[in-house]
Length: 282
Ligand code: PDD
Image 1 (spheres, rainbow, N blue to C red):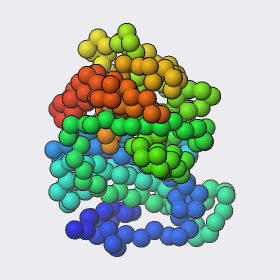
Image 2: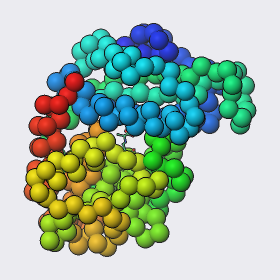
Image 3: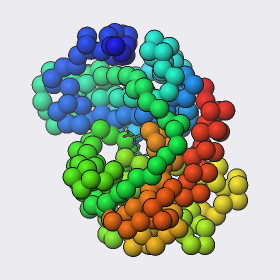
Image 4: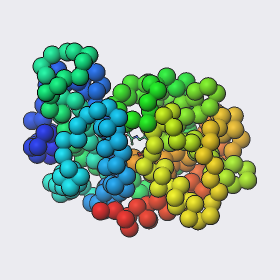
């Protein structure tokens, strides 16, 4: 069945939504995006995603084309119109177009604002993922959530070509993050280790929430870089994102982690995140 999507102020069937071929999102990947999870028809961690969107727009000097209240209302209207119980909402804002190709930012273009829903089960028990490592060839501002996703897409395809699920990206010998998620290990002495925040990684909204939940339960956290070798010897490994919440990693470059089974820390954090995310969803 056709979805109702939102494009530039209008709710319409997905087949009717069209964007100019000169749109800078299409020609230059000059666009930012967000993905917000939906549970029980409500938005999970919405405030974090809205705040990161504002930051991404600011970093690219893209004007914010709506108020916070308007954006929340659009999300809610899409959930209602599509009867979305579980899944996510994708939002993209590009710099629009002035009807030609030019490296210089257009002065008078209106941004293109596009949102759509994706139905997906998010609460099923996780089997765990097998990942490979690949070089991180992305640009230097990974803290901005832009739609330049060719490098992560190629990383994911490299994993698929080896019959695996995903890729961890490695730069200067250290893991930055997963192709579309933040990466973690649990050390032998039960510390949760994940890369510290910088321009090298996306500042995950799920990451912030999960680290807060862990800290509140007195789990020890170390925000620092780690290598693939350290990860292969860890007690557990896992990833976080708005599309998988907390998902165990059970194999890295052919080496089984936690005996190749989802570990207790990742499983507990996933249960906690779903429980607390549900309570706080709006
Ligand atoms: N990706 N790192 C990268 C490179 C990502 O693309 C994502 C999210 C994350 C996790 O961020 P968050 O917890 O805010 O979802 C980390 C989204 C889900 C995507 O591209 O579909």
